[in-house]
Amino acid sequence: MHTATAQRTATPPPALRATLECRPEAASHARHLTGTFLESLHPAPGQRAAEAVVLVVSELVTNAVRHSGGRFCSLRLSAQPDAIAIAVGDASRVPPHRRTPDVRGEGGGFGWAMICDMATATTVNEEPGGKTVNAIVARHGRTRGHATAPTPS
Image (cartoon, rainbow, N blue to C red; front, side):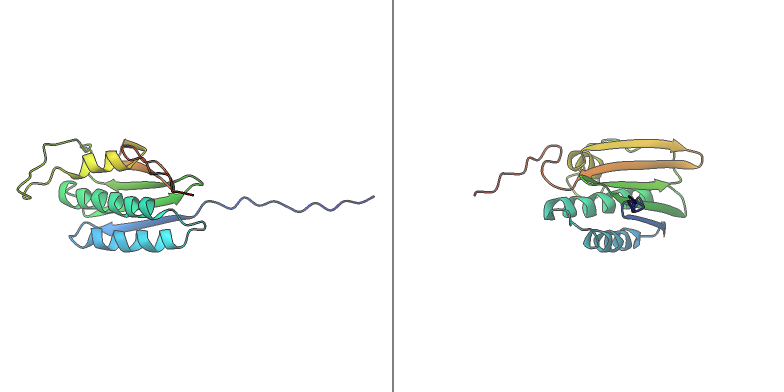
């Protein structure tokens, strides 16, 4: 008796890699790339998760543009079954840190706290020539600091 076996190929999770110039319009470009990436996922992340991913990307790229002093930054996104992984690399070795927010709107200070609140995990990896800031955002359900209310049946 002969039994045919199908070859299994591992399909890598969907991913996006981009290099952005550290210019003011980089965050807008990163938001567009991220939105397109999220729209390509099946199943799609929940609306709150998608909004959180776009906001985290925007904040991380904005920080790279404002604070890294480099000419370029990198954006990497990857989809896992339960989360979206975000990585933004830049030329600065200085890690992000919480600052007292400037409520007058002139000095910032809101971004890193917001990122840490929306992500289920954040890490900063020092690398030769800079750092990479990583954030994980849950695809559905609870994010740190925010519980999703159950939907009525």
